[in-house]
Image 1 (tube, helix red, strand yellow):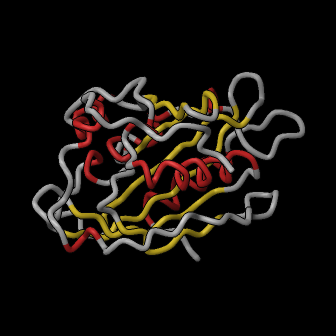
Image 2 (cartoon, rainbow, N blue to C red):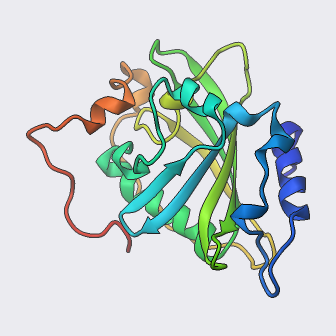
Length: 213
């Protein structure tokens, strides 16, 4: 699998970043988004705080403009449908614990039901203590004219994953079993409400217990 365009640029830049002695991945503090001004709106940064918290950080203010809502400090698990939370946890753990990169191809439906093919690259980074707790991501639509805001494609349940390929960055690749969903493909139905509506309290509760297995 060969990356191209901005995804290839980000991979090459990430590979060239300085490492602490004995580490195969760079430190978050070594990354400077000014080198990617042309793709800053498509960059994302996640920090694993614990098993139940995967927090958004902001790389650039333009990121929040695309979400049409502040995302700094929001837990990514609160944006995911309950059936997706376990897969999201396993995916992020695989990137950070192996560690490895990941290339994801998705079919995404926006709020108008339009479909677009989206490619994403995710790469691990260490925190200031040398622990892999950050994930740097870049997401690009194959058809830029068909705008797909980040709020319509991060972890919503009307997305369809077409492929996930873990990338060997020096430690091999992880073996990950994702939970299969046998429900009908929701891309054939009306997309769900805006993502921030998931944060509004309802009579239902989130699944109890840890997300990891």
